[in-house]
Length: 209
Image (cartoon, rainbow, N blue to C red; front, side, top):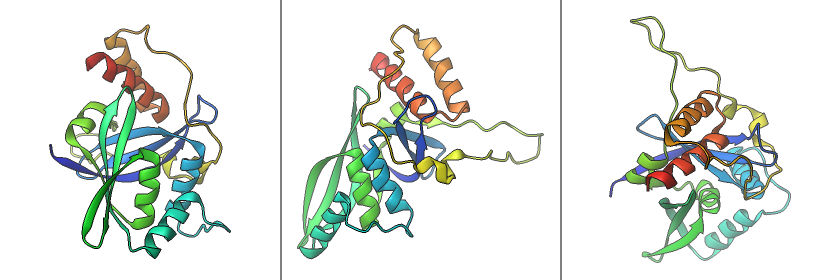
């Protein structure tokens, strides 16, 4: 299975669920986004790592891991999001010490928080992106002109609020048909409600698996 490199687009605070966050990953050589619902602590840790100018007065847990790894010459080489089961992503941290490689199981949010601190690349498998990736459609302009991207709230400082929960509860989509779910998914993407889109996508994935 081929690997697809991802970059971090940002963290979106849910407009419909208090305390919900969606970590948005970009396909490097494509247009798909991969939204992953994460907890408040992990959102804070990732946000701090993204904002290079922010330094907490004491090390956060992921900073402590980085300091520990540096002290014992352990390097995080890469992170791979390798599995998606019932809407839950599973990840592996690929580490190296004395030229010996080890693979460590981790929550995706923790793995990405560490990848940022080690400047390590983030990957997923193509079949996972095919199943869970979301296309953002851009309104076409006049013929012969290039489409312009609209303003993206993911890049604004408000996206980095620091409260939330790990598990998100809310509207169930089990009562909708598959065709209705696709319509809801498209509407959520158009409204840039990535957390809602992630939940609808997970319901679609369960139906199609």
